[in-house]
Image (cartoon, rainbow, N blue to C red; front, side, top):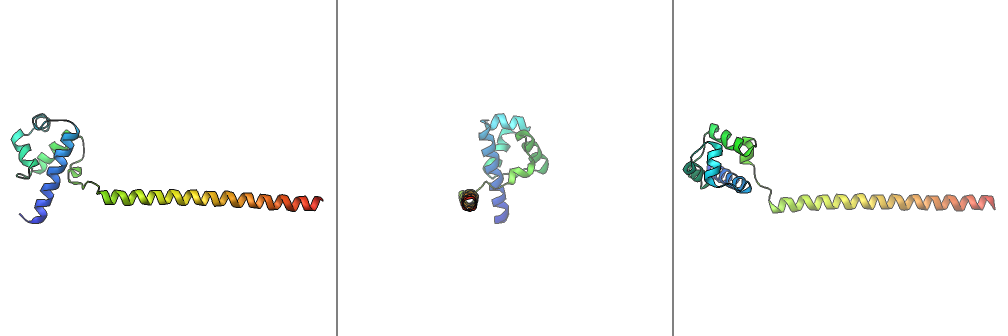
Length: 121
């Protein structure tokens, strides 16, 4: 198997183990739920075996997710930080634009009020 296959195995193993632990299920309980042997699940989780498409479907069904989600990359801290900073900058931009708009409206109202007062005087 090539390096790419191994990383795919590692990703699958990591996701299965993480999802199982999130549900607070032992390997034995989850294996029963997915209708596979505990030993086979253990071997998948340590990258020693790669399940068939049918087994992947059973594992995903036991998690109540789509099989493709078993291969999704967890978000990286750097990616999450970038998303957060983009959201913060967008929020700041919105607030600054709103503040400038409000200040401009108040300035226009003041000029109109002064001009109106001058005309009445």
